[in-house]
Image (cartoon, rainbow, N blue to C red; front, side, top):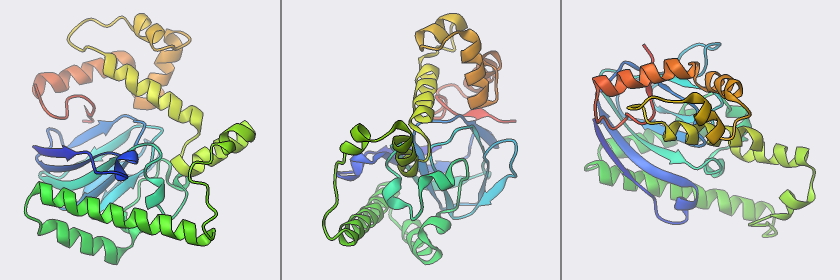
Amino acid sequence: MEYVSRVPRPPLDGLIDDLYYLEGASPYARLTLPPMPGALLIVNLGAPFRIRAGTDVETAEYADGCVVTVPTRALDFGYPLWTRSVGVHFKPWGLAPFLPMPAAELCDRPVTVEQVWGRPAVAELRDRLATADGPHEMLTLLEEELMRRLVRHTSSVIAATSGAVAIGDLRVAAGVSSTHLAQRFKEVIGVTPKRLARTHRFAATLFTLNFAEPIDWGDVAGGAGYFDQAHFGHEFRAFTGFTPTRYVEVRRRFLREHPGHMLDSWPLPAD
């Protein structure tokens, strides 16, 4: 697979971790992506892919792409034989200026890009991307589209308040109840501060694991600040659908079958 990534220029870099281009054959037909403390936008340029956001919902097909806010559970991605897309890895708060609705409405409910930006705009963007001269030009086009939308959003907020808008309203966090703060936080990011903290801690814990060595789960749980190993195990299963032991088995399978693969640090085979 070909993967090209870069950080956007300011002010987008305060909202976005990176822009990326992906093309090629996925190592598996289905991949499980555990929750991560960030949002995702994919503009699809190839055959449709499928997403199942939890075992209690139906799998949905995405032809133009998708928008995923900060998830609370694992996502099952079903890829075509050959996939091609450009995308955005947002910081937890970074997607808000690009949404016409509160992020909370999309929590664990991936939607198409058309549902967020409208069919004409998305069709035009996909046409421009499809005819671009290589990945770097495609990422530039995507960055320009995001910049236009950010400027449009900021201008509309300023106009709606006649210029009386607080750019950094820290008094909200300092002068209101925790319930009100959690509500405001959820409006912008899609989850509560507690949920985001849980996701951060879980993701950081996964990235410390060395799958080539034996793992002492008691030490892992204690080092990550969990109350005990049972609490860690419950959290692990809630986030991934796997027990820690089973997760390691599947991770090692990926590393064994695809050593050095660019996706080896996060997704899991789902079949």
